[in-house]
Image (cartoon, rainbow, N blue to C red):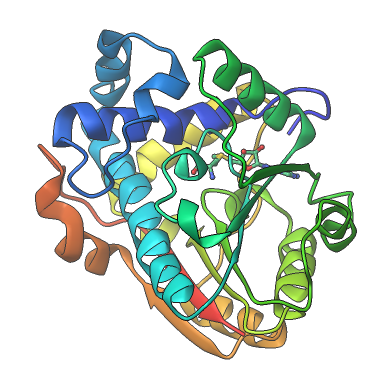
Amino acid sequence: MKPNESSRTALIPARQRAAHQLLDHGSILFDPFAIKILREDEKDVLQFANFHPMASIGRLLTAARSRIAEDALSEAVARGVRQIVILGAGLDAFALRSPYDALEIRIYEVDHPATQAWKRQCMAEAQLALPPWLIFVPVDFERDDLGEMLAGAGFQRNSPAFFTWLGVVPYLTREATGSTLDYMASIQSSEVVFDYMEPPQSFSEEMRELVTEQTEELEKMGERWVSSFEPAGIRSFLRAHGFREIEDVDFQEITSRFGRAVQGLSPGQAGLHVVHAKH
Ligand SMILES: C[S@@+](CC[C@H](N)C(=O)[O-])C[C@H]1O[C@@H](n2cnc3c(N)ncnc32)[C@H](O)[C@@H]1O
C-alpha cells in the first residue's frame, strides 16, 4: 500500500458483498450494511459484478470466507471468547451487525491508518453510528508492533481472542505474515480464520488470465499481491508459527458448500483457500 493512501483494493470485497446482497439475496452472508457503507448506486455495484464472467468467483469467495469466519467465531463465543480482532478490516461491517451486543464483547478493528480513516469517513457519511463495542486500532502490519498497539487500545493479552484476517495475507510479505501469526499464537486459546492464494499455476487457464489482469490493475493502484503459499507450505508455516490445529478449506470445497447460492457462478479452478487455525 502507498503509505498515506487508503487501500483502494478494500473497495473490491466491499462491492462483492454488496453485489452478493443484490444478486444472491445475501444467501451466504446476509449483510444489511454492505450497500449502505459503500455509498454507491446499485447500478454501479451490478456493473462491477458483471464486468467479467469470472467475477462471480470473487463474489463467492468473499461471501464464503466471511461465512466460514463468522460460523467459527460463533462457536468460539459459545465457548466463552469475548475478544474479537478483525485484522485488515476494510469496509467489513461485522461490527455493525454483531449479534453479540448483550455479551460484553469487544471488537477491535485493526487496519492501515489511512484505510481506517477512510472507513470512519464512509460510516459518518452513511450516518452509521459507532457501536459501543467497536474499538478502532490503526496499525501498519509492515511497520508497527501489533501487540503494543492492541494493548494500548485495551486488548487483554491474557484472555482468549478470535482473529479474522480476510483478504489481507496476499498483500503482506512473509515476514509481516509470520510476525502477525507469532503475535496471535502468543495469546492463549487464540484462533484465526484467513484466506490465502496458491501460485498462479493452480488456477485454470481462464482464471489465470484474470489473475494476470488483476495483478496489472493492482500495480496501477500501487498495491501488489506479494505472497502465495502451496497448501503443504502454509501448514508448515503455521506450525512453525505456533498453530497446531489447522483446517484448510480449498476452492472445490467452497464451491460444493456454497456455490449453489451464487447466481450464474462461472466454472473454473482457483487456488484460493480459507484456513481456520487454532493455537
Ligand atoms: C482487500 S482489502 C480486505 C478488506 C476486508 N478484510 C474485506 O474483506 O473487506 C485488504 C485490507 O488489508 C489492509 N492492509 C493491506 N496492507 C496492510 C498493511 N501493511 N497494514 C495494515 N493493513 C493492511 C488494507 O488496508 C485493507 O483494509
